[in-house]
Length: 100
Image 1 (tube, rainbow, N blue to C red):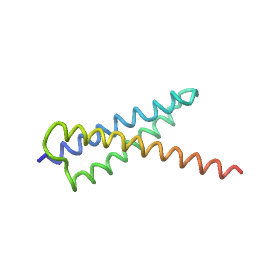
Image 2: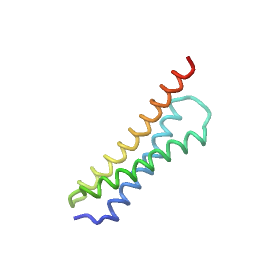
Image 3: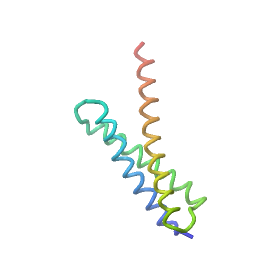
Image 4: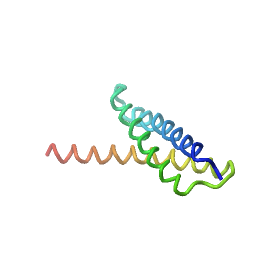
């Protein structure tokens, strides 16, 4: 069985990686000037969601083995990016309806 500290460490590193990757992709797709505020907002969203995912993973830890841990890390990495993407889309919808 994988120790709890490794599970939390893997989840947080996946959140940090997702927190760097997601805003970077958003900035490259937007053709705007780099905004530190937007980058940090995406980073903090991914990092905070990784804490939630690590708490969930503590209830049902991954099995031993490097493949299972890699799948666990990749799942949290993609999930944090998905949370940031959903936050951006929901935020965009609320801004559009508030202007009209």
